[in-house]
Image (cartoon, rainbow, N blue to C red):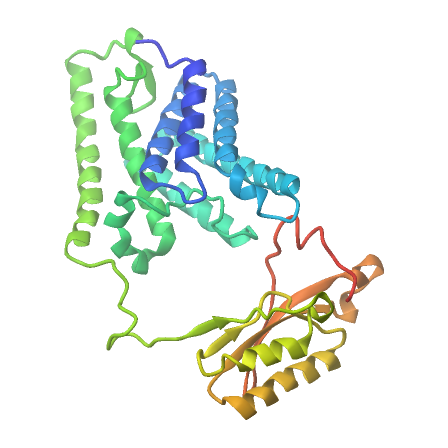
Length: 376
């Protein structure tokens, strides 16, 4: 059977990526997409048509961009900038994904004993690294968020976290690609222990070839049994969260403070304090929006936070306020145009004083990096 032509494989890649890598990636479609990409890349390697990998990348990036187009319009203050940055980020993730698949397929024969675990291991380690480096964390990554398959393994998340689910998704994709490769007629090729072989030129369709195929069935069935076995506890252990009121839970009420004010009162510390005091009896943690108030000097900040502390002391001693503020970068960091840069921080203030301070470290692309307002 002839290989799937590019005029079919590229639209199919685009369609699958639209369904799988949306703002809430589907576990089932993600598995299908990965399995399809693995087989397509393996075919390209076997036939030495590496240029076709580039076509796959184009289809993949296009589908992801379409899936994220509507949300990216409202992601930033400028719609065009939001679409542009979204497209860049999605293209990077597509390149990473194709690169990981390519590396695993090129090196599968180097690790014959760990062929089934090679791609899941590379896949999981790579996305763990990306999420630690990326300023947007797991947004736009290929981590599953919804799906019935995901529900079957949700019990394991407290033990292995999201990387464990990434490993399982990659494992199922590996399983399906191995099945397709071993028995395909589907796309015209099948796997042997060494590489993909064109069925029309395959001389192994004899007793020796049957022995090879049967020998390959043992790890395939073992791998399938492990994946199915890990899903069994979901039928015995509830993955639902604890009810809000139970002996095993402690409720924590949180309120977001967003006062209605005139333009002249924007970033007014007094307005936020007055609004906050109306909610001290309703919640333990009262959060202000990001960059709610501006402090121009360290003295201004300490005096402002002291005002919040005094107000809490007189109204409620069992409430804490998350004061989000902007301030100029310290003098030691300013040089030339950097004097215009400001940083965003949050101070958790209680009636006893400041509990801790935190400064934003991972900046939002296109906003924090490109926007450095003058002090207000």
